[in-house]
Image (cartoon, rainbow, N blue to C red):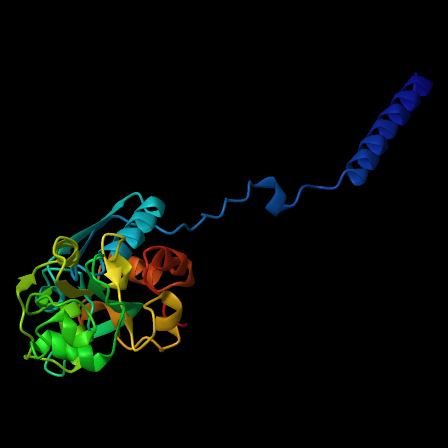
Length: 290
């Protein structure tokens, strides 16, 4: 009986020893590994949404249309609108808060305070004539004489014996302001027609053999002819190097101290970024040097 008890006790001790060895060989799980680690939240930028209202220059139509299309393609929740009212109206809209961004094809005047202007592009103001007109080159002085009525016939500047029909933009237009200030004919022009858009000026010159006018280089098409100014053709290269004298800035106008929506801020940042340069160039204007 004593021998049986001894054998049983030995077996129990061996089992306990084996269990101890197994426990020693298997590492105990740590507190960190025994509990599932919480996943870290991934922060993402909220998608832009809302409407960005732009208002102003008709000369900037091609530029703003290209920028709007590209921006909305990358921001499906945002709608950018464009109201072609002219530079003066666009500046007023930005100041009064009826538009997020005003569009002006001229620089701000001294009296237009409380506003900021950001140059989005540079544009030449082309001098355009009917395609039947043989005059191909005019000096600034000759252009001024034609605008003021001092040269009433085309023969006065080397053309046909025909009356000059001078066509331009309405008061408040950035293109008109740019043309008159650069040529030195402010408040002295004798207009046969004063039209409310760049496209209307181009169409009127195309329809009249004796007409001359001015239009944004970015908007000129093959229905009219551009004359050289002082021997220099209006082109992207000559505007950029400054050799073409009749040029102006395209500006985005915002009200100082006014909080813009995230969508409006993002649109402005895009329009001024290097990514927009190709779009501006394709629209016929010149991206400003960064």
